[in-house]
Image 1: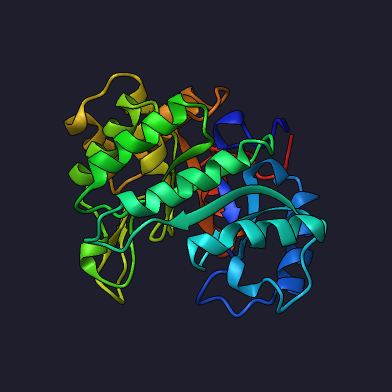
Image 2 (image 1 turned 135 degrees about the horizontal axis):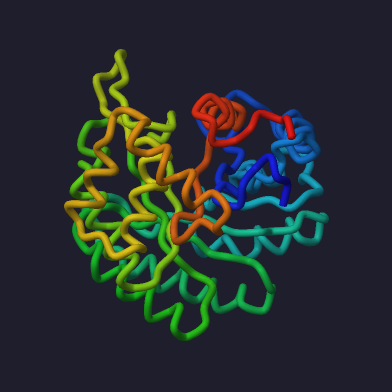
Length: 283
């Protein structure tokens, strides 16, 4: 691990430059990802997120990446096999199990079967995107049971989108984080995490969660914090109450919150440097 990127931030940011609405092509994204992988901040970067829908339309990237399952779950095994045969190493697979308001259990059953298949590929993780709506707690129980059986599957949540109701409140997200802690479930987040700290987008009026808020809130939960305390960290709109807890844990592995995707990975890096949490490329 580079001393320039502390263990707390290792693999925090996946490269989501291929995901909508980005106009980036696969060849360009792969070249840029290799640049990130050889940069001084390489330890911050997770995987290149490759939508399954582009497989076959462009050359397969020859790197370790992640597959975003924007295709029917039943087609995932064949797509993964095709990518592996072409030389791509699949670090993890992400796929939604249901739309908001739908029963997540049927989709979870499909991904659970897929995860059992992927168990033979050491290191491959399956992330089940569960809506933050009806059926959530039952879905977390199902995922916890699957993990106890040794299956490489865990939840992913969207914390933003194109409508206000897709942004959970600090209390709602705190409850989810505590529920994952209670079930020993690692989790990923997607959508809405544009900046380090909580902020309101002046164009949409939507209030976005900050990735540093989530990190510090998760540290609080793991240390035994209850929902109100975890929500307080999520609600902070100034970095001051977040920076010191982050500094105190900088040399420890990040618990539970495995990371998020960013269309431009340099943006979260720049904010971490500005806050003094990463030293900016200088020893």
